[in-house]
Length: 248
Image 1 (cartoon, rainbow, N blue to C red):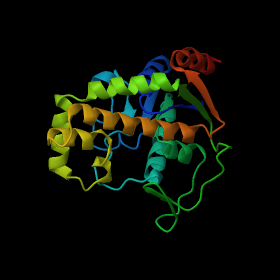
Image 2 (cartoon, rainbow, N blue to C red; image 1 turned 45 degrees about the vertical axis):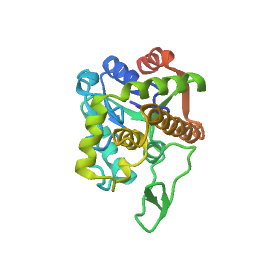
Image 3 (tube, rainbow, N blue to C red; image 1 turned 180 degrees about the vertical axis):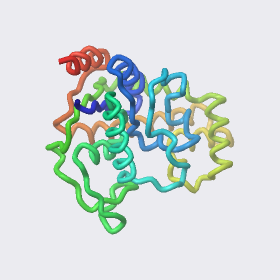
Image 4 (spheres, rainbow, N blue to C red; image 1 turned 120 degrees about the vertical axis):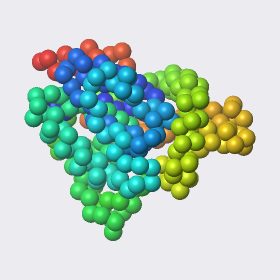
């Protein structure tokens, strides 16, 4: 049974479609989101709530506190263990996320050499395998959007995120962890905090947050589009196509 991977840029609809697929295919979800690993960072990372998870088991959420070290090698080992466990129970593992390095590390079986290796972002790695031949049995589905439509989705999501819940979450995170953690810098929390402190207007904070998300989405798409193994589908195509694939 192929492990299903649903990927795409931030705001593309990965969470909702993966939960729908998990319900139809007896699946369990493993998050491949390098921000969702942090405890307490819920609203600002668009982490699915317990209600939104609709009873589907989710793994890879709330693994560490902001500032605590958690590398791509750690995530790879975690994901491999969860995949084996889910399959052993006769269920379908569904990897869901937009962190390209996490997904590539898994499907191309990157071998990590520790802190003496080449640094990639916040992660350190000495050698990568070829990014064309997968080292396991995976089905990769990417969510395709026109640029203008994705931009509109991101703007709407930012408008919805700026709320009392986000402000309270931001204040709690700053009280607990300050700004020493890279996890807390940039992204929506920084701009929400600046708005709360009077350093930005609400419109300015929303605009900055939107452009952070849009630039992230473009980087994610650039990364993923180098992988020839991904089948790109529009959101409404995914469920019928995947159901057919897994029923054959």
